[in-house]
Image (cartoon, rainbow, N blue to C red; front, side, top):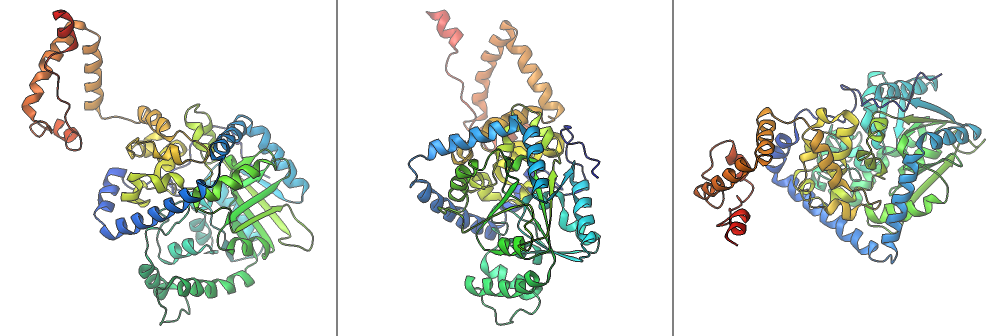
Length: 476
């Protein structure tokens, strides 16, 4: 019996999960920028993905119309979210599954841990899932004496390396194959000491390591890319096949899904299964698309549990501007085109959701004050909006969130003084005359005293014109 009341605009609780960083973005980014190997790894990977994606997107003559359709479906879903979630619950229950409502990360972790214990298991195999990373499920399971085993190759690399994901789609994008070989030699049981760093050899080593897990583990935990309200069908798309093993072999399957992943009808999948692979991996279709509806006697898991996770999503939904971030289908296209992400990597964001979408989603899930620097982790160039397959206007949301972020007293005082000056014509005219003195600071503003010199360190100081508009007008 659940004690949850979803729909209340409460933010994700602190101290659990991976939505808050230990330091602000500027400090973490500065350290990442000094890592030349990291920048080379990121530059190579994002360039490769961008090139592949652009090629397959260019093959689709109605790509703009597909994007518009995806946006429309998501907008409709957010407008009817309570209704669709209740419809989904009814459909899953009718198909033999059990639905659990989790208001936050603490409750979701408790539900999953209790279900694993009830199944009599001390180990679970996991499909790659952003939601379980968000709530810190692995840490909760380990604290309960349950071993989580990541089966996605990139997630396995992160887990064995005692690392954190740095990309939505490719969690180990910050590692090259030589580094991966060292991780396998150090942490993978029974690995061949002669292992090379050839991709095929690394994949074969991971396959041998995981085979025993697939065949002997009775409980699996997955996420979900989509959930169809009208039929109760869950869908996971992936590139390796490990997900299908986890979704078919165990006796018990537990799916943790953010409430925004629901879509109204089966036909809506037609749109997203065209948008997602092209925008994310640069493929025409996902190599593995797995769908399941409840429980089928004698075929697949005989116990299915769906955990619907809020964890701040209702708070995002309550913001008429910010709620558009819930349209995200986790394709990572915005990360692959972002000049900031390409140079700093995902760890600098301090959240499991990095890049442009993380800069708008994480602050809303936690409350802007807890991630106040993230809305400023952008140049506002708009590349993310151009790349987004569901047309999320990330730059506009960033500006909206910047207005909500706490500002230093000195900055607030300066803005108040500027507002007062602009509201008084005589003061404004005097300020225009005084602006000519900025020429003394030089074209780059190097002559400005602190703290003004900090502003000019990364910007050209605008040069005032020889005469103001008021002077020009008076002369005529």
